[in-house]
Structure formats: structure tokens, C-alpha cells
Length: 331
Image (cartoon, rainbow, N blue to C red):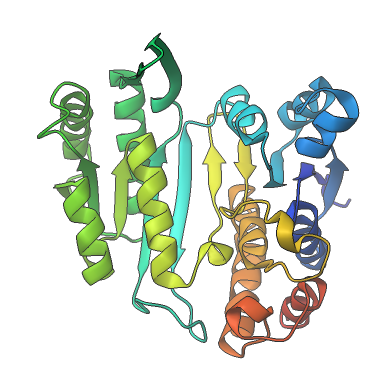
């Protein structure tokens, strides 16, 4: 009997989101893995049409799915993607940064994974206005979240053949909050004696990444620092159009390209689908479809190497043509 199809909630969102998600869906279908794709609305256009940026139907569909594939959100990003991450309980934001042959970039040897805590830090949203001239934002760091993300990063490193994990912090200034984060990392690290564990200040890490990113294999850090460093890493490999991400939790998984909605090029076939296609590969791997994930990644790498890409990477293909080029190389 055929395998039961995986149910995937598809949320194209705004701008180029629907286009790059459509490309990723073509790749997923071409692998031969059985899927049941169910489309749901969210984002700026959804808010304009219905008065709600993230309808209850969309949230319910995401919660019921085996995985969620998300495109991009515009001005409603905080109401859509941040809420989706929270409602799905995804405490990990997994952001790979890998340089590919054929892509002009600053640091061709880059190959790192940034493991970003996804639920707290300054992004917990506790902001207040004390006076018209004074605002404050409260940084939240807890033992539970810090130990959980440290353990995930160390476990991921061990399972994926990495030998070193770097805990990134600013405890010399943020003595209480990052001091707690570091204490949690130090408690967890001895559970993984085969791995080298080190600590580094976030500002020095930013400089060292630019000078020599091969110093880093897996970085584990708090929400804000992870957000900033992952975009810096994208700059080393050729831009955000090459960067997928996964939001993972105990029961749910949400995959999204790191780039934004780019409304200035929406609907013109100019959007680079690479990040969304690589999100599809991450989705496949999460579902246990390792062979299919590897096929997609290999085909994508071959297209990048031969410049069978969109114009932003030196190619001449449209968004859909770039997706078809990858499909032809699936083998």
C-alpha cells in the first residue's frame, strides 16, 4: 500500500513569498515523496481582505500539519511569523550558512550552523514607555530555555559530524542575563565529552566570522544575537537568497526562507527560489526523508555551480525556470 502522504500547511504570505514557495512545492512533488499540500492565507493582503493577518483557520491548519512551509510576510511579520513560531512551540531557529561553488561570495569556505534560541531574549516583546522621551525593553533569559537550546545545539553537532560548538554571549556587560545563559551552557556541555565546547563574545565573533568563518562550526546563542549573526553569515556566502531556516519544537516544525517579501520584484519572476528550495530539503530531512533531501540539495548545488540560476546570482532564469532546472537534475 502507498505511504500515507505527509500533510504540509503552505502559507505563501506576501510579496515574493507565494512565488518561491511554489518553486519549493514543485521540487517536493518531483521527489516522489507523497504530500498533501494545504494552502492557507496570512500576511498583509490577508489583513486587508479579512481584517486579520493570521486567521484562526490558518493557525489551526499549521497546528494540524506534519510541517509548515512559509514564504514571507510584509508589514505584518510580527503578527504572522512570530506568532506562528510561538503557537507552534518552536524553540529552535536553525540557520545554516554554507557557501556554494559557482556563487560569488566573500568567504567560499563558510559552512556553519547557527542555533538560535527562538522564544525569549529581547524579542519576548516586553517594551514600555516610561515617559515620552524614555522607553525600556526587558531582556528575558531563563534556565529552562537556555539549557534546552544548549542541549539541542550540542546534540545536533554530534549527530551531524561537527566537532565544535561555540556559545556566543556578551556576559562581560550583560552579567546577569548572559551570565545565566553561559552558566546553563556550561552545565550541559559536559554531557557531550566528544565535542569541543568554547565560548566567545558576540562582537569578537562578528569580526572573526568576517575574517575567517572556518573558525566556527556550530554557534549556539540567544535570540537577538542569533538573528544578527545569521544575517552576517548570509553576507559571507552571497546573500539572504541562499539561506533557508527551520523553526523546530517538540511537536511542530516551520520552514521559511530567511529573506523578506521583496515587494518591489513580486510577480515578475525575478525572485531567487534557492532558499525556499533548500527549506524544502530541510523539511524532507525533518520528516525522515533523508535520501530525498540529499537529492534536492545535490541538484540545487549543481545548478548553482553551473549558474542555472536567477539574475541575482549571475544566471538568466526566471523563478519557475530555476525550479525546473533543479528538477531536471534530481536524477
